[in-house]
Figure (tube, one colour):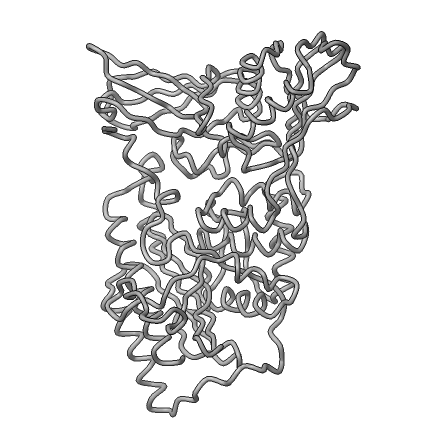
Length: 503
């Protein structure tokens, strides 16, 4: 049984709470005339009672910080309930909804990320008289098993020997050692960005107690291939905190880990900072297993003139985005955003998406990245609802609704709804969640079986409490889990209330 830190998975990979890992959309202006039935108008006293009911739920949640929400009837555009709706707040991973629309508009539904193996000379009797190039295309979904299949195809082409250099081209995206600089060094959801990426730029750290010490190893584990990795190294040290500490080397990642955190055995994915070096090493190892000997890699950022031998294509963009929204993968969001903008830096790319969103939706939001991981992104609940309405009305991007994960309207006690006796007989919620320390958000739609629908956003954040947490302790600070549970319960209660009252 795995024990110790290997059991503690980040919330960004274990999506807990209401509709965790759900997706959401963004784009275009709402129609001036709608064919949907209008929401039932509320008389003045009833409207005041509705607002009081929502306020009572917020008060009962006992969330420190700020809570803002807004819910709108999609047919009429009428605001049904709102409070704190104009407050600019960090959307966290709800940002990925905007990134989804941005990427679909700029890249199109047929876009695929391509990783190629290329040559600069002729191949004669299995010998390449020239250089072999592994050319990354910024594919954030490329993993060890896909690389293993690519190498098998290369071997099937007859290649066995390379007389020239082994070149790793990583210039398809601007290179960056981490997405955000206000996260713990060791969290796997904050890896490097590069034109060459593998396993979401994470390396698998494995340990097992032996006598008075530990057997330690690093690998690029897949389902079918488990190549060892030497560019990432780790040592056990005697200290209490931090659990992990990182030091960069020349094309190496050097880690130390606190002895008392390990337990008997386990494993954990750590972020890779020298992504191109990591990918090239794994490729070289897999090639050796196929009888193809390669020299040490030379990483370049300008692609030489070369001919393609074999290639791997990712899934089509909508499928990449569906998984990004479901699992809230930060690296995928940054890769598709950077590819869509064509900018030379993450900051420049975020500025391009900010300008685009302001033109498209008439909002004043600011985006600091494409994933919501960093500290600079701000948007209000009312603006997020505006984005949701506009997206739903855009014919070109109407498929976004289908990319989102859905669930039945939750029950009044804030728990998941009981399974409907008849499929399609209850309202459904489709949304994207966003969670960081003392930040919990949800935005999307509630759809009734008869076609009526609501757009909503619920944001909660205690930024002073978040800022007080030391960076090294931001994976799971004291009090955060209880705070987030209360926020999730409030989200469910508000959704139930809105579905029952307005649909």
